[in-house]
Length: 248
Image 1 (spheres, rainbow, N blue to C red):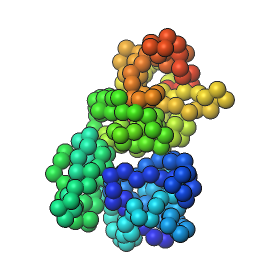
Image 2 (image 1 turned 120 degrees about the horizontal axis):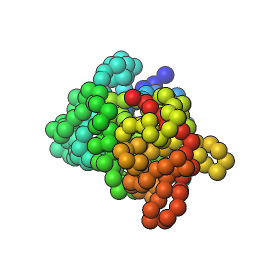
Image 3 (image 1 turned 60 degrees about the vertical axis):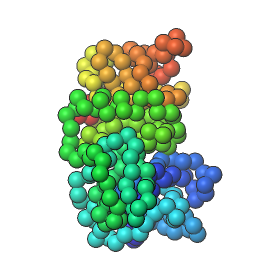
C-alpha cells in the first residue's frame, strides 16, 4: 500500500483513468489518501476523509510514508477558513480554497498565514459558513467556491465546522435522525429530495422561517414546504422532499 497527499488547491477525481471521464469529486490542498492501484499516468485512490474511490493524475499528488499518513490522519483537522487564499512554496504562491487541510504545511515546507478553523463549532455556525458559498456556481463533483455540487456543499459546510458527512446525498441521508415534520427542524439540519425514479439525488441545509440554502445552478436561497423546494422565480416546486435529518 502506498500513501499520498494533494499538493494543489483543487484536483479533479475521475470515475475512470482519463481526463475526459466524469469528475466524481475533488481533492483539496492537503487532503491525504491511499494509492490502491497505478495504471500508466493514473492512480486509483481511496480518500482518507470519506473513503471515496476514484482516479487521479499522478502529476497532481505527492507520495508520503505510511508513518506520515497515519500521523496526519490521526491529527485534528486544521482547515483554511478564508474563501480563497495562498500557501507559499519557495517564493511561489499556491492558491487554495476554503476547507483546505493545513496539517501537512510543515511537512511540505509551505508557509500559511491566513485564518484557520480547528475545533468543532456550535450548530448555529453552519448557516454562517453556508453563506460564504452563496452564488458559487454549480459544478458536478465540485467542492470549492469556484464550483460546487449539492452534496459537496453540505459536506464542506459541515467539515468546516468540525463534523463529518459522506460525499453524496444518498450516503448523507443514511446519517442522523429523521424528523417527522418541517416544523421540528432547526437551522443546520439537512433536507433530502427525490429524483423522478424515487432515489435521493439532492440535499440542502435548512434555515429559519421555511427557507433552505442549496445548490441549483448556484448556491441559492429558496422556500421549502412539505412538498419540497419552491423556486419563486420559476413559480413552481423544483425538488420533491423525501426526509429531513438532524445530524447534530
